[in-house]
Length: 318
Picture (spheres, rainbow, N blue to C red):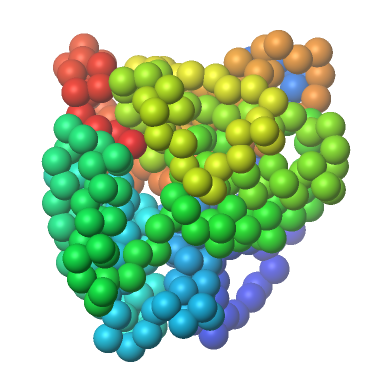
């Protein structure tokens, strides 16, 4: 039987979403607990941020804030920028992306290939520095229109309307949902949907250790709480080290054949911890992006002892 029915779409933007969910039994530490992974790398530009970028652009268009001649701007570690660059070009908008100057080479290349301008922010300042610079640009030049994934309600709304229903349809027996804490949009949107559709499902966040930065994720203890994030929806938060995130991403590749990014490793590390504490049940872990955007870093091939600076937070991986 085919994994998905054959479908055709009006264009690449319309194909976003409806990503596959697969069981990963070789990474399940408890034989009585099944772990499923929702593979957001199957989106057109390779990450969950395709959903968010499309929702942000459509919201800005509907509100009249984004018009011909506007420059669509966003602060991002890469995935949102890549998605916005692709969608913006398809819709005829100029796109500018504020990125820390130490994000992976692949992410910078992909943003540029899709025609967006890259504006560097200091890597040492991480996501907060990129956000501050983007908001300063908007304040100084009205031509810039900020997508603002950290504050725009369209971010969690798209997960409430699409991601949540998809994963519940795929795994109706789920007991626990695990996702990484970045903007908080995925956890908030899926959490809201599950609270209404299947009360009792546990919502669990994976976040980096304070001071460390797993690319795509952020620690609430570092002092920035995104406006779109509703922490009341969480049942548990687990902190994950860079080292554990990378080791788990490598195990996923070696044992299940899935090449996913370090933040996916962090999510699966948490899913395994949760599974170990359960008697029985089913977990769905959302894997936000693919690993091919990190190949230049040696994440999957370098000896861990050669990566100590990165693993200790010396390179921003948010």
